[in-house]
Length: 483
Image 1 (cartoon, rainbow, N blue to C red):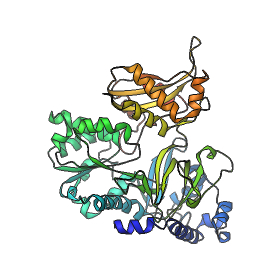
Image 2 (image 1 turned 45 degrees about the vertical axis):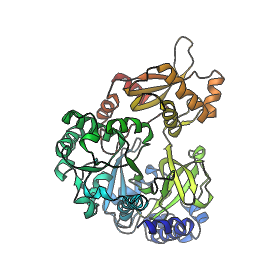
Image 3 (image 1 turned 180 degrees about the horizontal axis):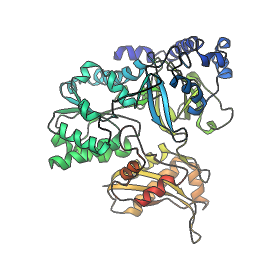
Image 4 (image 1 turned 90 degrees about the vertical axis):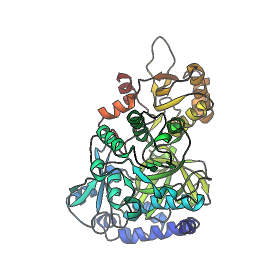
């Protein structure tokens, strides 16, 4: 399998051309294809003229038809699943998964694991139990289509060689209340020989803490001495790494994946190289918009062959699930072209630019990591927001709300180190500090588990849900300060 990955990743343009032609060919049979005159499309330039970039709202009318049971709307036939996700403006979103797109969702994680085995020679984790902290696998029917959270859907498609060692049990996995579910997982797993764990870092941390409470053990490494591999996606692991390894009592190797309800986009194919390998042959034709143009009426749209290294792009998907010109909301940066590897740098709507600084998630996460080096400080979670309306003539600033597991001895030094790192990463922010438009950031420690309480209040505790690392408003910040 790893050899196959090397073959297709070595022919990125050829793979993308094949995907593009197949998508357009199949799309001609659909209502969307007829509405957008796919018959006229011969080249990518033609495609851009016929298919605008849009978000979920732009496709919602077509998806509503599928929900009513109609076929051949966005892709030939009907979807086999709807992945249900929560959106900020659209409410609940129903993302189609078709018979053609399903192998991408299931096979990509498998490829990541096989690449790890090929590079390290280590497959011993298959001998132990593997736990995946995910949403409930229970599904409902919407318009005759099985519907649920992506992680729950994937639970139905897990290969037999994983399923035989998989935890938690089906019954436990179906528990809806996250805190009840995690406690049940603890009871079911604390005496097992766990070798691999998968899940979003913040929820894995919650599981670790409950394990320690249950067993009285100081570290997770004492409970699971053979735990050797952590698979994660959805958020940057680096802000959690120190806390994670302190809980474990040692380091473990990790595999990063980039799954989304809209498609499995990339995975870490090497422990030695930076970035995630872009899935160029998996039924997704990618477009990239320079991040500073994403909200323009007519943004520049680039295919893979025209991207540059170390530039931020909003990623646009065209898929064999029937998503066309779909702005997924993530920003990425290419760190390699041979093969094409990316890092996720943030969300198009998650940034701070109250004063024109346009600070993004990648910058705040890296600033925190650098400032924490060499210090005895552990961070559970954090959020950054602008403080515009100050009093007594005080300059505005960025407020960092941090849930510390272990506070720095010298908070002032820690604060200034973060600010200095952020100024190095973002020249606009540095100019605003130098020009006395902003003052250096301020840190507000919040009470332990304030983020968990906030997510509970929002009805988003556990599963695939994540707290936004930063925002251009104070909605999250003000709620956190109430906790």
